[in-house]
Length: 189
Image 1: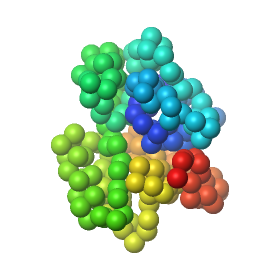
Image 2: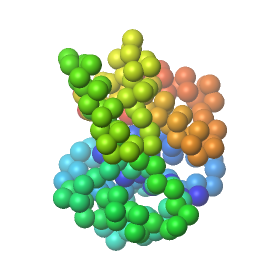
Image 3: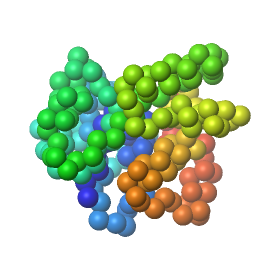
């Protein structure tokens, strides 16, 4: 099975966790660059994620080969080929598209920020509702910056993906190993 992630640093991190989850199984998990302007963000932290596809032609091939594409909706002005319309045209008919939001949460304006995240999820018809996870765990700070989730939130999203794709989640020992570091991905803070 081929699983592709498309989006910002959040999807790079999710791709890494999915690669770890499926490392001994017959899966190919990759991340596709949606536009050259994002390359500057692929610094040392992103090297944990393998199979990052950074060129247009290979990305098109990977889209066509994918059985599952987990993506953040990217407008045509930012990416002429990795947007929803193009994905629907390029993917094989059996490919499952799973849309997630670009996560932004400002704890200085928590209620409004969470409401806006929820609003974007509804407007963009996101399959994964990160605002629900954040609201359910509102006693805890789930973001290390306004744009970067902590390890727990990434793993909660992976758990949802596992349910959607009928896969097993990490075992307890693996989960605890990740949870030892609130910023396992070493995302910039």
